[in-house]
Image (cartoon, rainbow, N blue to C red; front, side):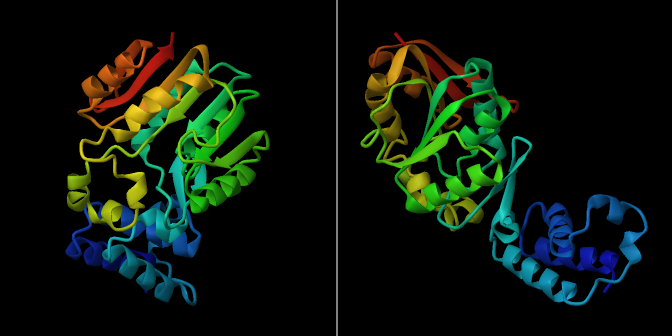
Length: 278
């Protein structure tokens, strides 16, 4: 089988399985199993024969993707903020929507700040911030042992040492005070979980998605529990669902936060709420 034949095979199989980005995914999986790059496919490589074992590996990868296993879980990594993060089952996969939160945090967080990333998951938010800012002293907290173990591996892989990870149900085991607190909490309404795309519904941990009956349960807790752990004038930066800006703003206002902003991402969707402790 040549690379060209493999691409046609993978594209056809994924399209028939209802994978929306079938052409892109078939190409990325081929590059993954062969260790080649896009330049190889764009030049003379398309008519090159696959090497021993690569065809079988490619077929197996395509079969997994046909079952809606996320591409990142097949390849074992996800690209986020120009960095590569290890991924694993039972830990929320980093997604491009959350890059907007990091971009907004980069505008607010100063070099040398103390930063807490609540619900850290893979660590992608905190570690990206630490990679692009200087001398950030970072803490990541999560209730999941699997997430904390993965976040530690990602910190090591990125060469970040001045970071600690704490197992905590929100602020239960947090004692320090921070300049900034970031969080991408669960915010999907419980009744909407069953209607999510299979890649999310079947492979992301439910406790990373389910925000309770109205999707706001964690914002209420964050609004109250974060205040003792922020310096005066410290910022709270939260990812939100695209219809939650008004509701989350009201929760934060009632809790006494000031200068509340709802920020829209590049698609025009409400994505981040920023505010300051008075």
